Amino acid sequence: DESLSGKTVVDSRLSYSRAYYLQGYIEVERDNLAQAMIYINKGLALEPDSPRLHGEKGSIYLQMANNEAAVLERDMVLESTTGCVLDSDKAFSLFNKGVSLIDLNRLDEAETALKQSLEYGENPDVENELDYIAKIRSGEIKPTPASIQKTTQGD
Image (cartoon, rainbow, N blue to C red; front, top):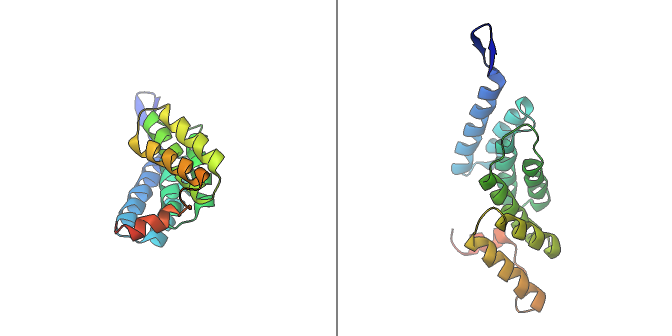
């Protein structure tokens, strides 16, 4: 909002981008990822540097097991210059980036992202992923993409 001669001017594109975000979020909850992506992309057309929209797009890509695209979207959140990126958003993005990188067998990068996420607070899920990386490296277990783990665990 900007003040102009005692009046408030609101950029309506931002409210529309938020509406598209919410519509996308609802479609994710309905497990309609293709429609969710349409709404998120419409929001990004209005607000291309939105950390919230890029974060949601990264989540959709993660659910679609498109890990390369998920990593790129997480980087967009972390590199945002116009939106307010909260520490919790950074931690979440770094964690999910790490998960995607594990699935891509880019373990060094995954470990770095996961450790960076811990700079924003403790998270037992991060510790679990770091343990998973250690077990992969030791040969104790073979890597299994998170998307497969999720479906086989009945989530």
